[in-house]
Amino acid sequence: MTNPDPSPFLPLPLATFHILLATADEARHGYAIIQEVEARTGGALRLSAGTLYRSIQRMLEDGLIEEVRERPAPEDDDERRRYYRITRLGSAVARAEASRLTELVAFARAAGLAPETRS
Image (cartoon, rainbow, N blue to C red; front, side, top):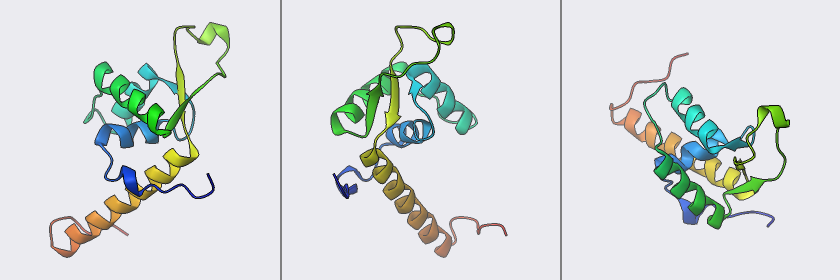
């Protein structure tokens, strides 16, 4: 896949976008994804296990994330955990969604509905 087309996936559900962000810098297991999303949003978004694992299943089927076999050292791991990371397609989709959201904020600013950015 040389140039993945992200357009069929947009707009992304909020949970999907946050899962892509959480797996962009390192592979994470489910509970670590929940913790990362909660920390990143200052507690404003708390994914339930059901939402997380339904989203993960769909994202695996769509090729946005993949399960990885590499594991942390045994003393830092639980063998029942599954680890996920973003794929090339997932990265393209996350970038496209970020661009789409940036454009929406620009429209809101132009309409006087969002604060201007600070210098």
